[in-house]
Image (cartoon, rainbow, N blue to C red; front, side, top):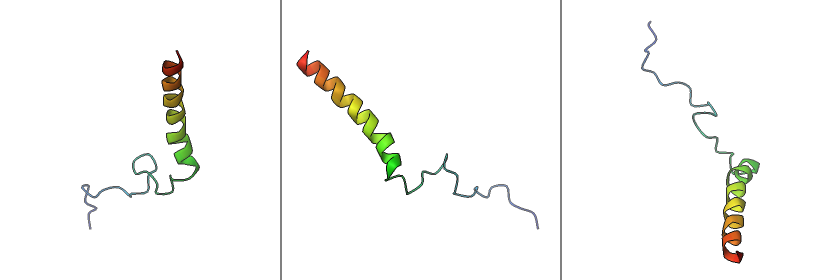
Length: 48
C-alpha cells in the first residue's frame, strides 16, 4: 500500500508542539525573564 502524503507528521516535535511539561523550569525562563524586564522598566519609569 502507498503511504498518503497528506498524513500529518508525528505530534512529538518540540519545535512544533509545545510539551505539556513546560510548566516547570521552562516556564520560569519563558515568563519570569520578560516579567522581570517589564517590572524593571515600569519601576525605572516610575522612580525617574
